[in-house]
Image 1 (tube, helix red, strand yellow):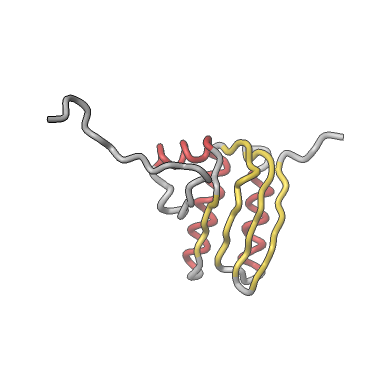
Image 2: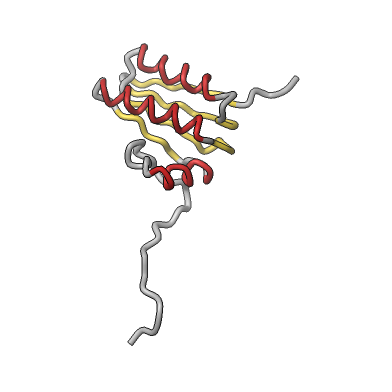
Length: 122
């Protein structure tokens, strides 16, 4: 039997939820993500942390779900934060300029690059 493409585990604490995702987020699995995020809000959870450590791929379908959930959590006075996004999602966040909107926490081992001038130093 084939393994599910995406699994979602939820841990609640008062008005905060931690969703731990494993697998791939794409057009096929994005509806599961949407339902999971909507259920958090229906259950009164306003702050949602999403651990993406075990996510191997995320395309724009996942990004759209995260953006929609971020709008909904903000509307009820909460926040959505992405933790340890995979490189594909980091790239999409950079290209679209949405890392601030999603309060993305950089992946482990990431280094903040600082622009430097090239050429002769005198």
